[in-house]
Length: 181
Length: 429
Image (tube, rainbow over all chains, first blue to last red; front, side, top):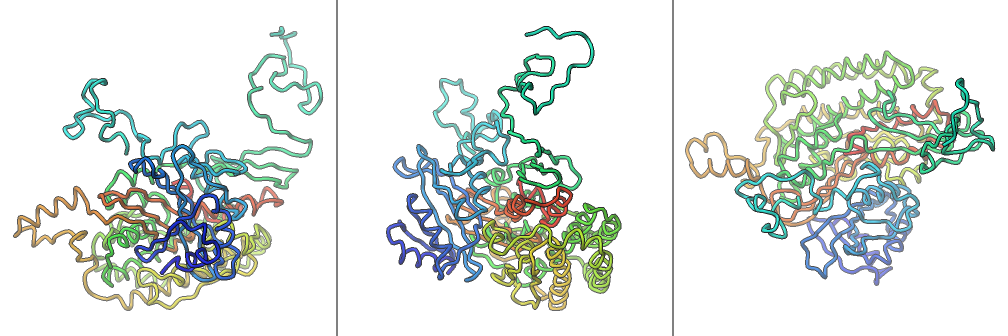
């Protein structure tokens, strides 16, 4: 099982940091509390039984249709351990009002760009990052393209399946089909 | 606004002297430059823009270099000129429709992108491709790896002023693209690997071409090595340059020949085999010093190892179907369409609507010529990926560039960029 090593290590060394843990498709996923993320990643990197020294990627998944009390963003971290030939997935959930995570650029040098990309495309801020600028989009770009409520092209044309677009503005339903793509 | 004095050349004000006012041009006219953040310069440094239209940046990479004489004090890469929003496109297309998009990310090794995406989707669906399909995937991917390394070899030698390797590399790469053309009709963006298998089985002429490649390429690779491996100029320009220690390589998330050049024998084909790679016997070449020359040696050796893999896969190529028979993905056969109305309807639905993997999240990675190419795929049970993040090897490798070129000569920056083997389509996606 991929990631079991990291899950066991975190359960044992930092029991308060692990919110829950689940496995599916042969991959173990660990949900970590935001406050203890840096601590958990440092432990995974430095502990003799972990040695998760390679940052694979960082990204976020936007779930705008979740219940209001549930956080909107899943921030996904994946670290690889070359020594034990394993990788692990950590998820930190953040809300729409406060989409910030602590920066990991002092834990892994490669996090610098990965966190900038996440801020650029999904609007999840890495707090404490030394230079949090847009990376892929132009510096004066509006919005964060990989959010689900970002309309990726102009005004849709009304067909039978989205005939609501043809209604006058006052009569349109609040959420139109095809508005979030 | 002051009047612009007598006509003639404006009085020269040394920009570094006390008289020089930022925000006013030499005639004292307001230029609005006050709003621009002027970089603090001392007498010895200079900001230099390299790219985006620079022949040695392999596409559209812009580097802002802070120079002290010819020494690079700081390097800030500016990427995103080729950002196309493929990850957003994935969310609007069915799984099979995403395959042509993946071709265009790392456009020099399109089959690896196809394979990475297909493996992730197949993991979600819990599908296994038949052995013949897996072996053909391996053969085609390894051919692509050789083609990609040949292109890298030619262009990175061209960056340092050696023109002939480029011509020889192009001559040989052509033969590999001919194989692509034979099997799929397209030379580069083949989209040949699909979710559930391949577009089709390979034609009969395929065997001849592979036998020819296996017979001629060892000698051709020797020829390439003869051109530059022991060339004193090449060695002078590359040995000891752009050194990356194993610790730094890991911390930056570098993978592929950049990581292996630093002496870490980590190759996903060996470490976490996919698509029957565990059936083949091959070595993982590594470097000793982590410099530009070591990365060159690693790639040249990898081409020979790829030939070994192709030979084994080709000699043991099993018979049988190339596509899965799982009816969630597989299209009904022509014969069924002629006899069964339901099959025809199902065929139509599968092409127009696509298949629906169960909810979940998976990560699947392949060893592309540039390193670990991973696809993190989230499914919400619909016929499109809810989110598909591409872990691009060039992106992480390039993020180590500022570290590698610090305190090197500006003329060596192109050698280091060449040695990372970046593809900007892969970096920006």
